[in-house]
Image 1 (tube, one colour):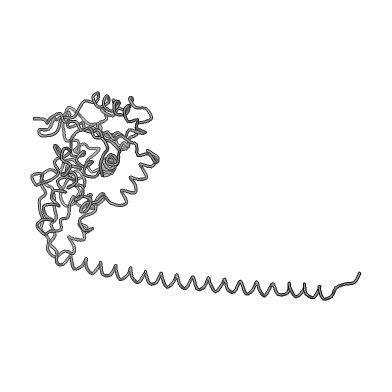
Image 2 (cartoon, rainbow, N blue to C red):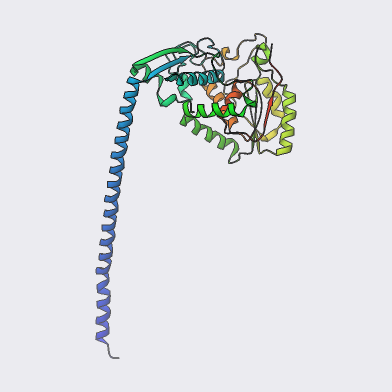
Length: 350
């Protein structure tokens, strides 16, 4: 059999060219990679320089504001044992008042003895664990660097959210909601924690009925001017009716009263979700003291944090059942709206 030398030579030439073609392709790819890296480096440098310039300008503007703006450091000293969301609505009214007269108001829960700093004024400002100050200043920054500071009293006598009647005035809820959103927003870290907790409790469901009941010192002391809460039995009956009508995935229940909690729990099985504090209050109903003076609450920032998180979660429920109180006012200020609301109005203690 004759061997075709020409064909063999042609095949050898064909395969001998492949390494050259491969090398050429690899070189092109490497060039493209180098160009891509250089391009991204230039873009990154540009944005870094831009961000540095923006940061510098913001810092320069901030330094100028601290030297030129008037700051009002607000303290609520007449009721150091008042509830946290009582402070919340009074402080919101205080912010509104002093913004309107040209101040940058700053809330101070540090420099006077109160149940939130445990009467220890050396602690950091407890307020700033949960909320940003207007324009994102801090109390420490203002006290150390601002040129013009006035110290003011924030009182319940000033114009503020009305925890008795605001639920029936949509324009009032919207007004305070927008003011709080702009000048007293919740800290990002806390909101992220709330989202994680809600994911653990409810998964992806938003078909949730929120239920809040105020008890303890309301029931024991019957403080004049405060709303009378419903009985636990009445609320249980109403919640069952709503669940039958709307078939909720979950019922989120919040109360500071251990006796109310014990009565409520057996009625709703696995649908019921709660976020209870680690510490039991063991409230003494015969002494009729303010609940915040309880030794297990006074200065217990984790207890207050749990209370604030409960309030935020309630504000995110689809529907709400609650009695009137400062905490409920906080829920309605924080919420973007409820589908259905049941708010007990049984008058006020005289």
